[in-house]
Length: 439
Image (tube, rainbow, N blue to C red):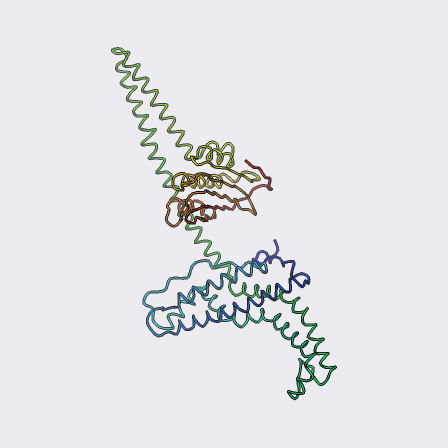
């Protein structure tokens, strides 16, 4: 990996390496859009500056104005990646909370500069209407200048006579020859504008990245905070799992084994006096042992299913689909088996989602897709139910989110009212080279 890729700057797009009229026209349109967004940034900067200078207690409108700045910065990040291949990392965290009882412009300004990312966005929104607009306006200025030169080639002589002298750049329009020369120079600027437009857009993206990208120390601090949170969640999940196992053992298999021991003790006392009663007690003990064995097997399957350990994630998910009350189709495109902890987390996450589909979705069909792409295990569970699932309201989805976060995984839920529902899970992992297998 080269240095630019490590910094989040992808390789130069093909349209910038050479020259094409189509790429130039697209670049001009994008440069014009960036100039328009610079004017929007000017409005945002005026809004923030005005909110800071408001007279009155508290922070007033400053947090709301900075939220607008953050949304504008997010749009610039998206355009930089889509148009120029420049990836700009997002803010490490949300806007800091407004302090209670802060008073006056100094307190408002101090709230902005106390957070590094908020401070960067504030400086960016102040500078972008000038510095950012400069990068974007260069090809547009070349087009305007070139069009003006071509115009002077035809109408420069009478205009010069009417205006008592006229210049085009360093050329005085004094007659037909100088007017034609101005037109030639203007015509030469038009292909230059087309050539420079995509490069100016990329330069704007690099400038935006320099202004908005978090520092390495901030990213590291956020990473440490994330790891601390996920470690705490993992410990809580592990303790909850241990308590569940203890409860299931105490209420299930352990109770049956104790009852079986009491039954065998009673049979021992009746062995010589009532053989028929002993026979009944032995039958009861055998039934209790079978039931205890079944409960122990269920408990083991809840800890780590044998099919997952023996045959891998693909067959384990197929087994889930076979016992699901909703008709479920499974498609797998995995080049190999993930590491056991990742495989287990993905399995139980899919199991939880499928259980939710069966219990709450009202769906007739469901689809499970497992794939691997660019170091990411991707699982998508889709159903044709009534929708309305929300991770913020359901403890089951939040539990899945916490389980995946332990491995830096993410959960995304798209569930409009009336459906369909699509749950997407992604977990980073390393697998062998791709090889497609379908079920």
